[in-house]
Length: 283
Image (cartoon, rainbow, N blue to C red):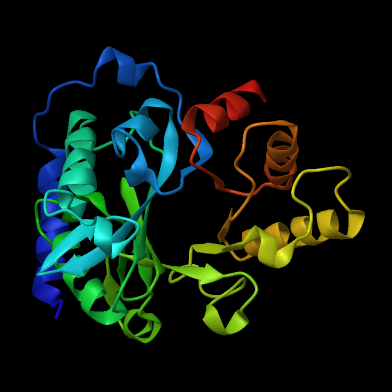
């Protein structure tokens, strides 16, 4: 159970961390221009989890986690988990070092929100409870945006829970260091228009909502639907993401990315980090 004392400890850790002396960022890091719409899907499958995305300027990364013998292991399937590939080693510790290197400003040297999308596999409640312990660890707690008694304090990283989401548990919390990934097409699952202090992000399968996959002309009715969904979410203060978008390099993918970007979709989903980075920088 997360107590008010632990919340206070998290707040004090945030203050202390921003005053710590830290090494300056590397020249390479200073030269990276962050890309607000770039989301690294299944980020942990890259050669260098997190770092490959940061080198390209991505501002959102996705990690799947399993609770195995008390450890939060990062993998797409349980059979692929390894004891050395923990959430702490692949994401929390590198993010901590980056933020400290930037003197608490953020993951990049600009004050720009960075999203850690955590896809919970297996039992939602027990995995979330284990995750909370990591997030409230004073070593990491200063990193994460905080919800406390109806107010949100933005910090360098916003942790958002996807996959197995313990909705009732999170709705009942008066303070937390994580937020909820709602579903666009399911209004019973905290969709568009739900409280942004709980659900700053709404996501869904592209192919579950649209038939067009980049080939030919985007049907006018579907384009209008896309723009209306994004407009409604933004009016509620929520960000929008679609998964299951085409991700094979070529004109179809570029056409679909262009429509998503033009509509103001906040996170473009990809496994091809250089491909999306080049696309966004060419606009």
